[in-house]
Amino acid sequence: MEAITKKERDCLITIKESSSGPFPVRLKDLSASMNIKPPSVLEILNRLQEKGLIKKDRGMVALTEKGEETYRKIVMVHRTLEVLYSRSGIDADDACRKIGNFDFLIDYDDAKKISQSIGNPKMCPHGKKIDE
Image (cartoon, rainbow, N blue to C red; front, top):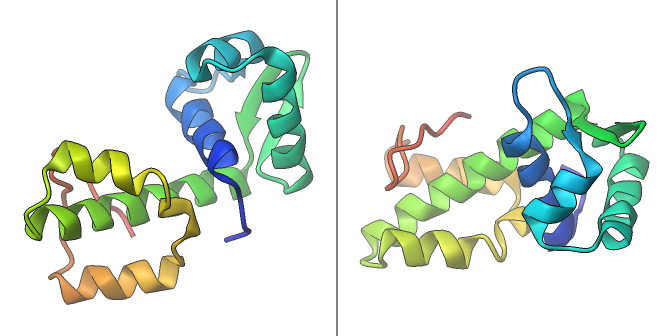
């Protein structure tokens, strides 16, 4: 997985979760969802496009295949770490918030090892599926 920043991670997640089916998200909606001014979102999008993670067309934004894969890996890492944190006694919502600050930095292969060490959980504490 190519190195990304927290803002890029947040943007990828927002693009994926704001898109409805095959329809891409609009730049202005992305800006509103992320609470970031359009020029700043455009700067993030340009970096994501350079990394091959998104495609832009006439104000519309969608993840590429590589972007979809990066999204899946970030979500897997995030949810696996949520399980680890919650099993350690940390509140699930606190775990989610804290992990969101660094999940994009964790190596996917390391997260798979963590998952194995905690029994390959299938669901995070919020009931969302963990896919490998």
